Image (cartoon, rainbow, N blue to C red; front, side, top):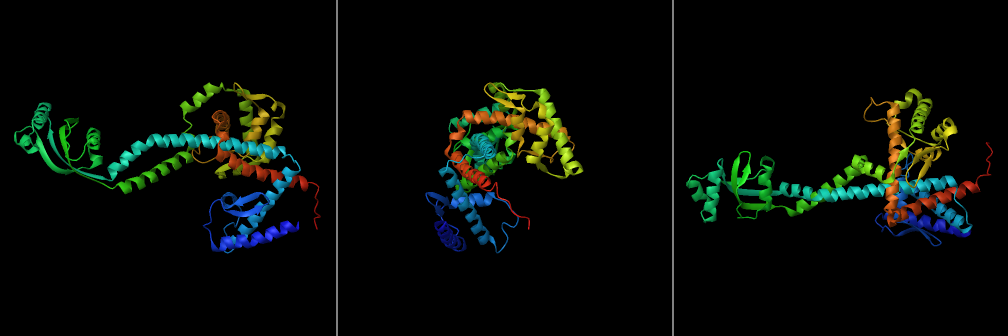
Length: 410
């Protein structure tokens, strides 16, 4: 106990110094050390930013709040260490939470892999568009409405004649030093201009408004702005895809998963569950229901749904070739899911509920796919799960140690 008190006093000094004088210490620098365990700057920042409570960033109190938060993390480490030392088994409810988080992380990782693939596929087109935007080109060209005239002009060019000599012979109209406006020219000409070097002459190109032979006179390009803009556009595209991850779950992808894993859903139980959830929401929220943008299912709603479906809880609701989910296990996973009331205001509550259930079923398939791809073995996912596991182990032993504590009301 004395050693713990000394540790806390020591880190009170270190922590105050760190956060009042310097914010730029390294990600892996220790903020606190408890035996062989370390709380790094990265872990502290991650947990601090992920935790939400009123007044968190209240002016004048931030350093005090951070100190108290660090003490909480130290206490959590101590509890987790004690749990491991005595062989304490984590409470099943917390183990379920860890399992949910793992499934969520590997689904997210699968989405990110798909997003990164889409970004990679889109990069050449985005790069080309940006290059054009920051490239100024001047060209000289011969234009003719006649295919015969343009072919005659092309023959003279191959014989060494100049554009001026060709134009004077009546085989087309000559336009000198034309400044290209990319948005105004035909795609066939855009493709040719992308491929030509300065002073190089194109073969005849057909467009809806006639034939062209083009020579590049000058090309100016801002490569630094191209690279900067490219990185910004790719990040923006990736962010958009992650924010709208359901767009990635296109019909072809989902149909392939349904076929691959042989999905079967009990329709009668689906109808029972959707009507029960609808009944619980109406009972819990009444007329206030549609005033929310979204509602998260917490323990009260889950218990109410179980009570109303008690006779069917052990029935098989979903199956694939190698997996089975009872109605009870499916309801358990409704915990922390959300039903949204934004968007189409005319959509009925029943339709919204059925959409949510559909999404959860599809999440099962996506999770199976993610496990098959062994995404759960990736280092970054294991690292995140270790953080959460320590948290839930600490919560579990804390609940055990305080289960018999009674505080007098006075």
